[in-house]
Length: 110
Image (cartoon, rainbow, N blue to C red):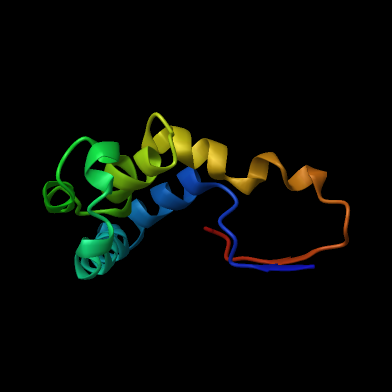
């Protein structure tokens, strides 16, 4: 079993994105996620009810990955907040359960 670039702790990863390069990577990634969603807007119209607003309005509020996760990801997967999503979706809580020998390759800040 091999795992490469697996974000073990989403909260820590997000904090790292905010610190590195003055948060430029985080903002760029947030912009790319919004752009991708705008490109497929016709396919995500059903999210209006889930996120509690028009998708277009939500996209206007996104400038970072945390904004995207707060407005979209956490609500799409029924997490109360982005922080709640980061904590519960991180594999660091379950890595000790792996019984198969596993090779894990990661950056120090991932």
